[in-house]
Amino acid sequence: MTQNREIIHLDDIKQLVDTFYTRVRADELLGPVFEERIQENWARHLDIMYRFWQTVLLGELTYQGSPGSKHITLPVDEAHFERWLHIFYQTIDELFTGEKAAEAKWRAERMAEMFHSKIEYYKKNKNRTIL
View 1 (tube, rainbow, N blue to C red):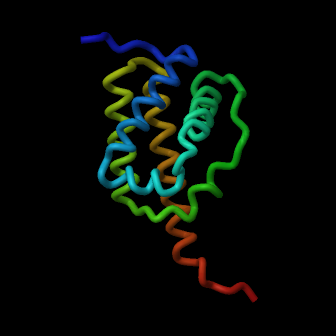
View 2 (spheres, one colour):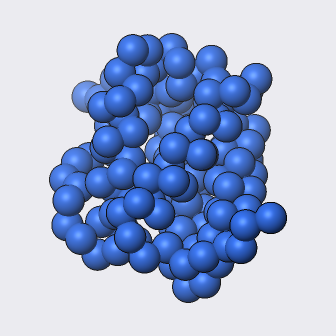
């Protein structure tokens, strides 16, 4: 059994992202949603995720983007976010320890709450006309 380590390098971020998305793609609830949206663009998506988490956890400003607009129309609900967080936490707990691991879980939880809230708002208001 390998010992968990701190998240301190880009290689750690890549291991986290690669392991997490391998599990997401194999998941019966999340896999189809991600495959439908990302299709053949997995290398690009993974690169964006490396840069996102590198910026968030390591403070190396390699990510610039607006993730909300890409997620707002996803056909997901609370169960999808719960599964996403479960897989993320499981991946962190199996591979890493320490302050950055705890921060990654905290940030993932905040993102899930934010995306879920925005998606629900969009679903309720997408057919509403503004006068």
